Image (cartoon, rainbow, N blue to C red; front, side):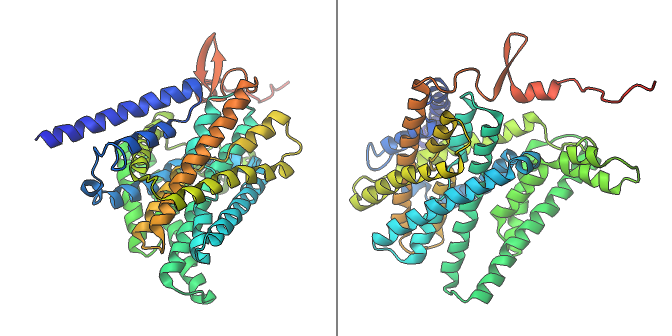
Length: 442
């Protein structure tokens, strides 16, 4: 009974610490994940030794899997189709450019360190993208243009997906043990085609259920359905995590998609513009529902980064050196994106250069590598955790310097002033009165 009480007390204190770390982040722009990692290290076997990893090892695969599928699902709510279309070309070019450069650099560093090509490439994909769990909270706390906000948000959301998809692909290749192009291509296409089909179909089914059957939003039911989508996809030999991404995309863009569908099926003329703008559709998610999903992500993020701290081992000198070199190399590699941001203001280019932190997606995939028995997985995990911590620290320092220099003054991007009060932007957008554009008949 005493152990149960201590565990519950520990969970409570960790959550309180998570909220405190988030408060510090909002006040001083020091990322909360750094505090969580430090807390985990202090509690772990390499410091105070209050947490025994063997006691929680059985829960880790379940926790890691759920964190991954929910990370992709919640990340889908940062990808808006209309914004994606508007900023698609620049965001996609910037995303692909930075992802490829980062992947190549990390792969080369790992190969020079004596690791096989596939293992090195896996680590490259693992650490190839910036973290949305770092970028999006930072952007919400500083004053940047809407265009820059969309650009960096989309980049972080897309690279999270790229990291997960390409890393899982390499794991599949390693497990298959073959480079034969035809069977490999068939396997991978089948894997992701099934995931896409199940995810989209699940999205359509859920939209119909909400609009025609339930008539109201049930947050927990969505989570239950999300887990079912993952299980069904894995049973059909698809990739369950990618299916949850497609499911999230369908829900987040339900208004736009249902509007387009109504426009196509409508017999009325001149409805094309209304259909594309989303005026004919209905959203099956609410702001409060999305906030609920963000809170679950916060819960998962809090415990996962504490878990990362538990695993950090400073006795592995090689992992520290390789991870440190990768951290600095990724910071320098980010400067290469200046070739694509020449038309931006100087302070905006500097902000783009400063957003290179790795985070939750990389940490989750590193753990999956251990579960999938990837060669040298334990070392990859240690390198990844050092690189995550290092890039978060370096990126935070650069952003702190930019703020100290007087950049990004004014209300944060996620806040506007309405009637003398600070109000979230989405609330103002939601409550903004519609303007009747129809002309009066003369």
